[in-house]
Image (cartoon, rainbow over all chains, first blue to last red; front, side, top):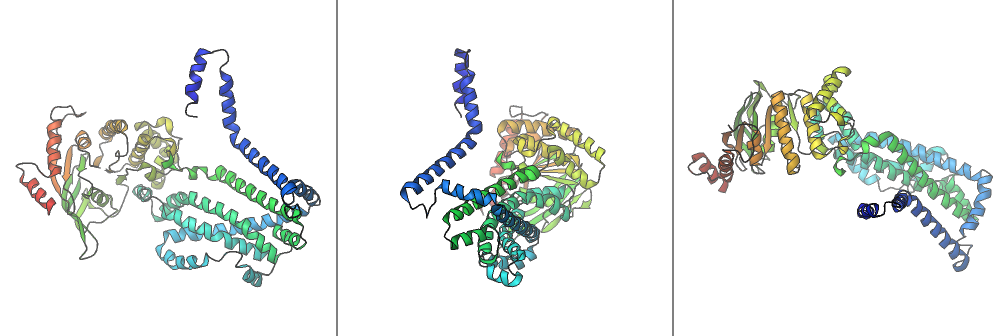
Length: 283
Length: 265
């Protein structure tokens, strides 16, 4: 990239009749390179998988992509998959929203009020090692196997990631920024709302992105052990019946949902919070 | 008049205490441009924070026009070296300037007029909609100046504001700051460790000796004509005597000999 201008400049001067072709080509490659490389990566991976499971390994253990695709078609046609997907996604989104919202509120208070931080941080430090999976038995006892226990488990999985990032964001608000606001006449509440919370947004968003991925990891064991619907339940039943093709359909779907949810979250952040994400020191 | 009397600042507990400032006396006139000059660690920033109201002196007093300073307030605007930290990166240039005006409760049309006036004064009239990350380092410092001036403080307290800029931007900022100062006649207290910068800018240069227990070693009145430049008649001699003062070895100056002795204790 660095030497592209110096390459094209003399060619424009010496051969004025057909210069732009390479430049156009370069621009085109530069523009679509991420898309093209992604397509290439998936094509090669799928081809390798197809070859390996046709010639190298037992296709009952690792069904080839073609077999997975043909198993997927009836599952999607019947509406079975859509049902599982929507149930799991709704559980994830509700738990994620509740966990993130509470974590942001608690996090900004903990980051700002020292007494609250001192009283809560040791407890957080102990509780955050309890994974959502570890909480499944008690969640079923508390909330039954209905939706509430799923919301609770996702909530549990999200809460600590968002909380810890929110606290870090609040604590890392530059002192100069707070002092500038004070000089400009802001009182404590105004500094908190107009300076500290906006300064913490990039950290909060990072925490939420991690939490979103964690939610999707947390929902599967919860549905495997304590549900009668959702992608985890589908995995569990397919596993008991040794239907490897259906297992692979479920696994591929989970990956895809994770990818799509993350992209949607990023688009949403870019649409609504982009000005808070600007990192001045990077410029 | 900003009056600093016997200001002493001691950090730490009894036994492990650290005396940062030991009896600072300064009288800074209205509209005066005073530079606080000294090596790193001499307590310049501590003194500036005390003037701003972010720290309290252990002993002594600071009054502005006879009123004792009690915490930070919009009559004294502290101005920071790192503009990317001090500015609000999610607000546009105009919104950064408007921030303090909103807090004052001014009407929208008043705010717009003031914002436009000060952005124009610092040469950012065409960059009102840009956010700080889209501005260069020098432009960010000018934005900080506009934001500070917009709330009409009586005193500007500047902590090595141009130390992070390249030499050319820095020279331009000196010219612009002096222009703005001559237009607005604010009192300026400007901290620097650059002797030439101090001579170019200031009416008076207060040289602080190296800490701990910093004091104002000597105050130089700079009577050179403006605009000043290093080739000017008298500039070099002034530079040399200030440098000798900072080195603690001005010959025949009893005050500085005492300071030189203090440094080696």
